[in-house]
Image (tube, rainbow, N blue to C red; front, top):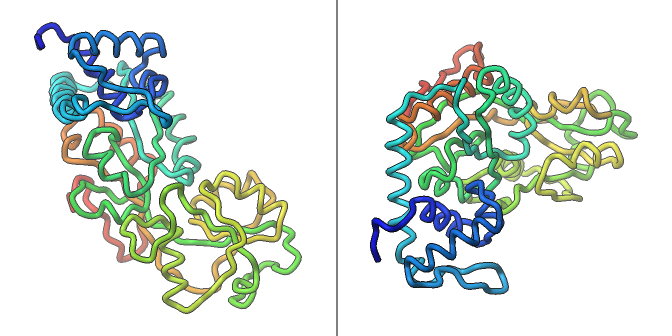
Length: 326
């Protein structure tokens, strides 16, 4: 193989195929149409003298040769990206960079409307790609460069990553405004007798021992520790369907207060304090060492801090330093 004859764009296409195992999705990942992506793979197969990917029932699987070269290709591309991004000062007013951010659907509700309005004003060419992955995959996505930033309650990333505290939050109960049995307050007995909705993020089923907790895991662990039980009538992977379900049923849902307040003006629902004390949790942004000095991701982290960091934390609270590594 003559390395000088390889078009770098072919290696970018190869890396995308290794991640997606699907020609159409890989093309979307790198901005190529399906025919263009297929053509790129055909050229690379000719250069390598190997099929690289073969069709199976579940999609496209890499050949042994492709699996051998994949780590080196990804590492090489990462080094070049880091070098090129660091060589030119990031200018948000002129940049067309697409940042990849790990968010839950709860995070999308809280952050995206305000963030997108801000980007339109100060960085109209900058784009975001929101990634929803199982919490267990966040570490790998940040380490590999598939994600630039992760935002949320993510105790699984507490070690080995830079982090910045944005704000503290607590859980509340959301239910239909005209609930037939619950008025302006919620008692412990009512909480236990009513049926509930639980939000289980896709691929992150509630686990007593998982470090990759969601806020759902946090509240369930707390209830279990206190010996409190509730009947879960419905488990859903996304929050976005919950307000409509609440209006049509008598179910309750326990969610972070920031999300509940955001939805209150839009839906015929009400928010009540929980009938027991639940510890607050911290929402942070996390990033890997590989992007710590990158001008673009530094700018994006600064935007997130400016828009969402608590300016007046509760008395006695300590703010995590902006660039403090756990």
